[in-house]
Image 1: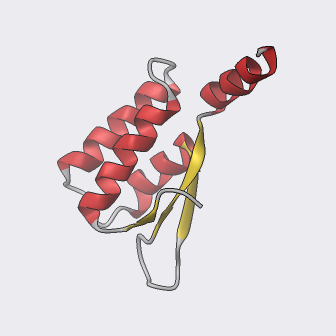
Image 2: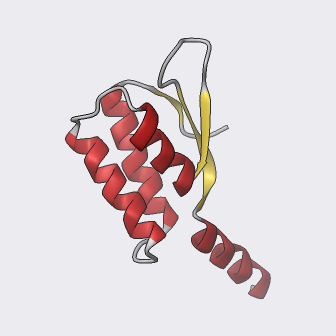
Image 3: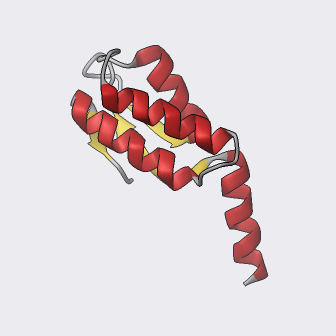
Length: 95
């Protein structure tokens, strides 16, 4: 039990997702595997195909909340998946 608590705490601190998310933000042959809140934030800020999307902005806010320690990584992961579906770049949310 203590071991699980340490693993969970490490995920929260580092922002790692339990399951990766696979997206295709650009060229067809360039899939990207997103494994953490920082990965998600980087994609949202640099490589997002729909920059004015409300769902993208919600995902950015969720990532920031996790980085500030206000939310758990799963909140940012779910917001990222919703935004990726909206942008039609989601290939899969688990490997």
